[in-house]
Image 1 (spheres, rainbow, N blue to C red):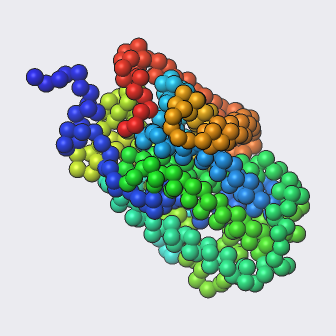
Image 2: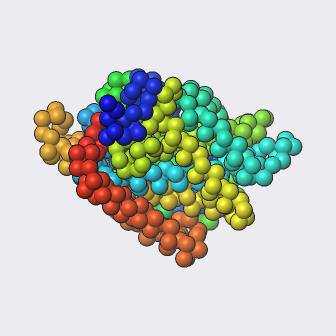
Image 3: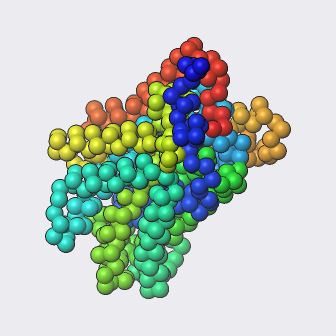
Length: 487
């Protein structure tokens, strides 16, 4: 007899099991997958100049140092938890196992909202960058056409094996680092505008301008590093590779941003950035101008194409993350069962990937039809909303780490990494979330009404997830009790 109680997720998979492609990713592959989400070239070419302009000028280099330390503190508890829970739901799974199933349900829907916003928002910037870059060589298409091309390409890659995406991202990310390192070395070799100094790391520079806004932009540049645990079910030796990839990612991203922001400030001249910021008349061309000044030749042109590829890599990485969160939520009963299945051949979260592709296409089509700006509206609004949600998830995860290890005292983990550091990280991240929520309209430039409405999508998603998990507990208590366990 057929067991009619089996869910679609139970029956999925060519071998009768519903599993992601196990043992397909090593430390290097996971690191490139998450570093690509942070989009290093996009961050330094787009994020650093805007952070200088709206935040604390040359002190942004010191801001990156502060955020790097904060994220290393957060990572201590995060990787300790990762050694004991292997689940592609990451924030959701940790929160469920630490704070309970209802809190896990809230985290799941906030994560789905956040990763959707990050991916779809980046499509706006990708479309605008591609239209400008390819338009310069005579290939003229509207921004939304380039966005749809990216949606199609990412949809195909997301549908297939994750290791294929990882190989493509390795090449793209390596090229991003290479071009920026060339510029960094040129500025360093020339001694910058007025000699090398540690001025951008001084406390007076860090606290100049609007340091809180600057720190928020610094934090946003790291979003994506936390996705190492999303690939836990596909990792080789996950107890080793996931923690290792997490620490490497924070250090790789943080040191790269810190040094590059330092050299960018010196290249333009610290005295020219503050207090009038006259060195940032056009922040969108700031790094390109430095490349032309210190390197010259074809480098600025090459940077334009690598900027587009950087955005594509980030879109692909966030697509993969969003698809996996949908898959886990379906597998564990928080979304319909049919969402929680993997492809029989590729063992990819293909249903979640298709849903993500459709959502991206619909949102881009709406923004295009209404004639809304792809950068100032689609990109800025949605990526800042995604950042807000992820900051909240990180705060919740820090407290979940404390609760989990308080109940599980025989894990072999030390109290410093499971109680003290997570408490420091949780409090700092909670304060950052509240500040970001209150200042959301200032960070996005949205109109007052919309600026007030958008951030409320995060608590709304949390409430919806809490209620969905509560419904699952009433409907299927045994399944509810398994929320967030190792996949």
